[in-house]
Length: 96
Image 1 (tube, rainbow, N blue to C red):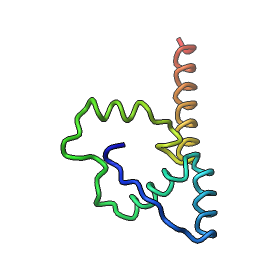
Image 2: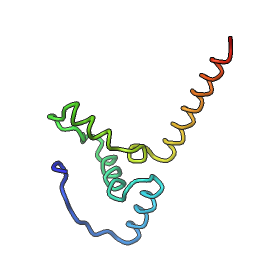
Image 3: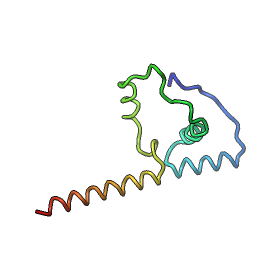
Image 4: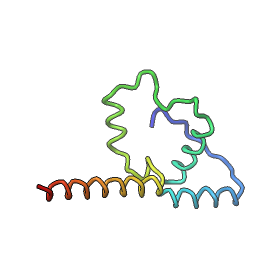
């Protein structure tokens, strides 16, 4: 990616293992886990550049999976809400 800085960092093994475990739990690559945690530390930073346009944003978002956007708990909540909506629709359709 042209807007990313490639780097190499040294981490204590214990920190690496914790990050790796969190990345697995959140179903995302280690790099994505690290970036998400750093971004949460600096909430004032925007991932959007001033020159980002709708087409570029659409292209980026369409290549992402839910696992890259949400934690496992968020995915579970989303799935539960979708099932509740589907159940309400089934109930509405069967009720005259």
